[in-house]
Image (cartoon, rainbow, N blue to C red; front, top):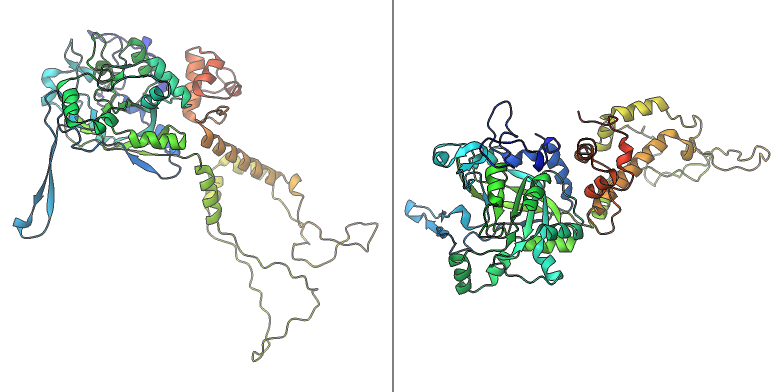
Length: 516
């Protein structure tokens, strides 16, 4: 099911014996039980749009040192790493041996991790007593679909709190309210898209790295109070209605901990929706890079463990960044890489001037001018044009552009520039005036639109950006859903999606543009 086809939170269909907000069955296809939940929102179209975030090739790891949390809380096994010497086998080599609880470091909570506590039911109707005996909800399903790939969005609460003098400790039950999350998104000029992977930085890993071993043990191993996103009804509805594919953060529990029933975000995301939760991710380098680039969106990849029937996985996450200077860099690099055919400039000598004498010792011979050969190679631009039937049809309707059949730039024939003054001469253009050439007008207009679209994308997310006017298919579908199905006003749609005023009206009235 596409994001635009999902019901809003208030319209989620009832599931027998479960509270409102349960999404079981929505992602089932032809009666086949779903094991992916909101990861289904990472469609090829969403991923292709996300790849536009890669502009400079820079990347940053989001994985905390694997043995960093040396004394995890909740009575979990401490991670250990041993290097095994294989010399006893007769050759010089080593192996790694790891013992780790996946919940003790940068990790994903899978759909067997937390149940709805009252019913002991996990995502899509799996009961607690069946977890160890089934492949349903196993973490391997995430691997089988190709991992987690999409657009990441960072809401940097730690930096926001510092900027606005909000004092808190990450090892207390400090709640990050929805109002602050929305303000951060506004300050970072972020417009959410269906399928986004939402990251929230609280500053926990930064605190832990600087804390003494005594404080680490006192606050993490023995005391389980942690800052995180506020567990409230409005937060739950906001998470669902934005259709995030997954959420993650640097906090131990993502939501403020301990939970305060009856509302627990883990129950909604893991048990009701099948929506991954990442915890204890290292977001410090990412935060610095986002500040440097003034851009808080990026291309995110994660390779979950291929553990059949597994509960969770280490994150194995990377972020690939864009850059405010990447457009100019790409343009310069493209210009430097282009190959143009060389051409001997026309001679200024008269055509009847005698040729230069041959060099001494070389017999004179005929002067041979090889015929210019056409290239048999189609470059990328030609392939793109050839695959556009509308563009090709337009060119055919224009007809061939005929140059002057008798004149060329290399001609030395004097041409009268003024019929009343035969004695004056100047070069005559070899073809139609480019300003009146319909084919060139089409091409230049197309280039101008392409340039404008690239400039808009490069500036998206910056403060003062006027909004988007070039819409991809996903955005058009969002507009149609909000306008035609939910009855949202045009101005509100443009505000929500970061569009320029008047863009929605270009789609025409209901029915002119529709889904296929």
